[in-house]
Image (cartoon, rainbow, N blue to C red; front, side, top):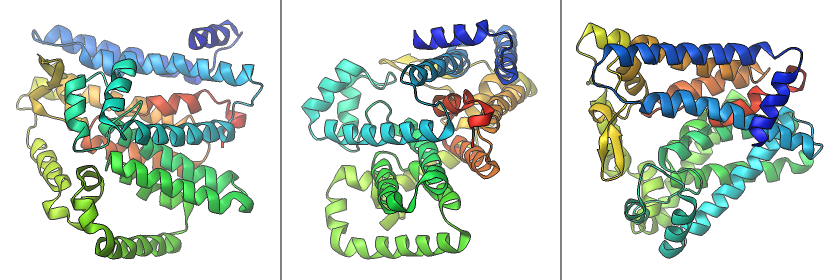
Length: 362
């Protein structure tokens, strides 16, 4: 409701921001190509329009609600305040995630009440919880996407706004968020590595990586048995100590195998097959052709044109949300890398910054 109200106020203004119109125009073109693909293909589904196109519009409208809330609270809606809000929210979310994972009964209760992952049922969630941590609000690869972007923004916030008085505390909190996010989703390491290029100079990055490497080399001497004997810890950390025998190695092998499944006809390359998921089986709609790779999933649905528009829309959001060239380039690079693993749009965080007035962007 806040979002609809905020959007109504924006539309009622004499001039609507040009970038809003361009985003909606690009989204309309995405929908048009999706419709063409559906029309050409006799067998199709609507998961891509729902999970990518419609979801983007929902996040866009919802962002106006957050902006309206800032106005009600008399807080300036700018990059600094928004980043602070996101960092605090992400930290609290991580603490809540640990809390609900402390008890399988508590996890089941929270899952039933909040239903925080619509792709799996409660029984599947309970099975997963025996071998890995499950996030609150967002979980699995989605958590890795969210915290990859958060870590980059966190690094920028520290570099840009944090004074020396709070610098050490902020660095400790930054590493806490990274390590805890890593336990829930190994994908978080992508955002961490990229964020270092904002936080430190290249020389200091090398020092930091060497220090972390030494710590990881020494830590198995003390904690290796503990990690291996705890399935949840092993899921997030074992790949650092023993990649060859870790679950991450198996996941990487599956990922590389998926890249061998390319379209075998010209029509699919151009317009796609209009299929994003397999038919629903036991409450879960699997991935089309069992492919979980971001680029290939979009390619198989909308062809090369659909893939181009997907990247273009996300790039437009990123490059029109910040004035810092370094930040935008690293966020866009993060987006490109994450989609090597799975579909990783920038909507949930991006639209919040997209609505920041240019004069208040950093």
